[in-house]
Length: 434
Ligand code: SF4
Image (cartoon, rainbow, N blue to C red):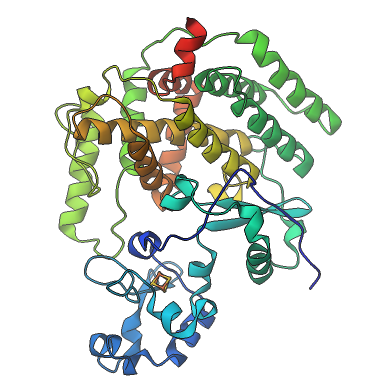
């Protein structure tokens, strides 16, 4: 097979720091060939796993779904939720015994994600990995050879036939238009001459205009002209951040419910009645927004809802850079719309990406309040990113019709900008205002 061209998010560093996080918090879905290879490794004779599976290798696997839906095989888990192959030192038994290539493909790929982008493939990374979030390790360009091999293993020969995501619901455009929108968004959110929250407000403004346009008469090259025009106009139309206004009560409720979805730890191996009941109770609590939060993650404490919404110290330029990098990698890596993001359009996918950033800051405040602070530390922010990004594009609940409708409602009512103004509070905003 000829070499597959691909673009890399060169602002990103990553090396595995063996934290074992990915082996503790993700369901590892495997292909049949992964299963056959693991079976051939004869774990029933292994000193440790032999006593766990007791001669029955099928205990290494678990099948999800299957009665009314497609079934998926995943690796079984230990009692604490970690992968059955994770050893007491936090290392992979398959890797230790048979080498990296013997692991399931999903484990070899993580935290990378590869997506078609017209004539090339593009690379994104998952910020659920703490090393990605903290930008630790070598620059991704130094891992080009390894990435090339993973792309070769995972990319179908006909990847160029993948259709471009719709610009908005029902409006098909070319890949060139999609890539241009993404490029303009990357430029805007990386513009350090204005406060990050103003950049977000401007991009929401012009993508909102694109969404309102009727495309019956605007076709072909005129779509591109429109894109360029509205993006450029946003600077004049929105010279500064609008004054802080309260989002409507219904939007605040919608947002809290979304933040609750982002803040939970997936409990994929124990969907018990008591866990379901806890989810219902949490939904009711977040819906009301009164009293204390009900944490669904071990790193979060019960704190008063009101304390999260109090005035916080603004976040530093370094912390803004972290959020800009997250957005930039997802935009460059086509990790925000189309197939990698619940088949949403470019505009809806971008609105969901902005909501991810707002939700991260909400969760970071929650963590800070749990430590008695009204200042988000670097560690709070990194932890909030890893918790929230675990779900973005991967949790079925965020791809449901109701979750998509929630994003739509927040965006079309103009409350998304108000949430940005309330929770994305940077030092730069005040430096500019001074
Ligand atoms: S198979 Fe190995 S690398 Fe994959 S999740 Fe399990 S312990 Fe981690």
